[in-house]
Image 1 (cartoon, rainbow, N blue to C red):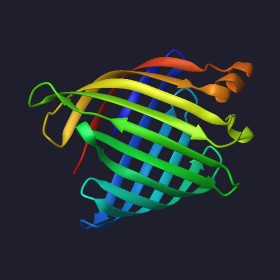
Image 2 (image 1 turned 180 degrees about the horizontal axis):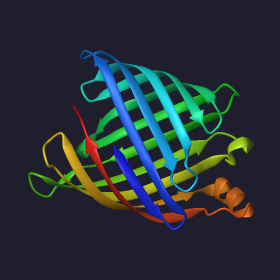
Image 3 (image 1 turned 60 degrees about the vertical axis):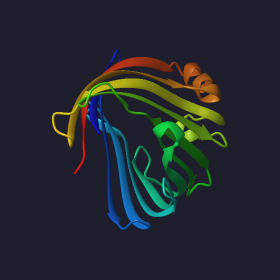
Length: 200
């Protein structure tokens, strides 16, 4: 997934990709996610996860491994989570992270694909973050920390390549919102998206 978000604060590029190798039961996964700010000409976030993935049911995998945040602070984490398909064909990716500083966080991502035609798809997507404690270095408060909810309209040029447009709300939640508001930071925004998804 590669997309550019157009917001009042400037444009941000998001790159997200998974590579896996293995069989039906056991796989080795590498997950990457990066956010690049065109205004500041730098990566604001850049993480890589290396995970062992084990099928526990026909639709669910248990995953465990390591995550390293190259940006913003070079922090490493232990990871455990689940990835799969919930009833009604919701794609789910959820994980908990224990940092080398002892901070426990978690996130949940949900995505659904509604086929309008054989090539045109509507894709609602949402994610939410949680922290078990305050993380001062990242201006994060305990409890729910951030959320995003959006929708993307994509068209399959071929099955493996789908450009899309969309709109998404992104915001801080709970104590994290209060902390960032007190620091004079924006706590929510709605952005226009353009990008593409691809697989091989």
